[in-house]
Image (tube, rainbow, N blue to C red):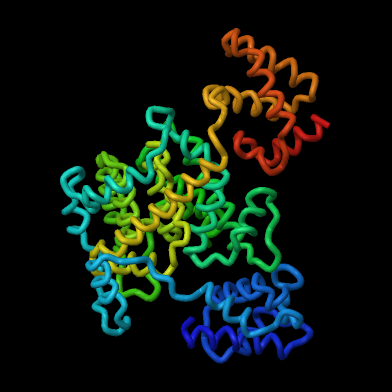
Length: 461
């Protein structure tokens, strides 16, 4: 653990220790002797709470932090700070060189603007950011037994795990302070974690909505203007000062923090370059190359007022979900490596560092979901075959607020009209089980709104 980081965390604990009646984050920031961003302090406090060095009481602005006297010791402090320490993704020789160049102090880096030739020089299926050996390696890691099956089959098998992993990791890369378990609870029950600000909660819920959109539309979704704009609209919901900016290209300048890169400011050029990115991405045949291209060029253009990196991460998963490959959820990816890789693209138009991060991240995700599939076993092929009809049946029952008697009549009638004779009884049995098993933690997979669910629940009871 770096001495500087250790000292900052020890100082944080000392400040809390001097306030036996508890201290709020605003008071903490006042007593700190350095200018540390509020989000960073929140993350460190959350880590200390998880390590049981501190405890928290209250929620939101009323939350206060207290020292946990029973468990206070130097070993726990070291363990807590180590969670933020310096694991680095293994880099290629080229990646190391780029990392050195982008790591020099910002005062020594040259100011640069958007270079159209970086985009124009790319010719789909002729230019390749990923080598053939990398593509073959990733394909072998990410391909499963779903080839030839409907788009999204792989993602639906691991849907709950993917929803949690991608929501949490993508949010974590933005500085979100939710823990993995807190994220899981929020997505399952809607229960907000105590002491978290509303922005962090909304960010994770927005990821859930965007991931549901991509997986549910897997058989129809494509890389086009509609898709990218709507992903941004879902991810930015209730997070932008101007609600009209959700799902729209920006018309005002943006700045990149801690960078000498200046994105294009002219709205007409933003529109033109955005369309060029979409056109080129759509033409790319290989899913790994297509994904990487999107993750490079969408953040580089910064087409939206905010949330650009999040859009790129989710849009970059579309080729994998559509082709039944392992998705990329950025499990264990250090924020610093990810940001440094993007900075190298912004300021140097160099891909090697970000490519190393992308390849390592995909390897990590693919191994996780292979283990997940092995753990859950093979799904019932009958349920897979009738997935859409089962979902339609459950949704109709809820939407029409059917009670148990009406539900049973409807399911039998629906099965007689839509299911082959030999499968009819099994279909009715499964549909009735799905309806009777609905609860507040699982209705979203049937595209049921919360208001619809709770209204139906009253009728059902």
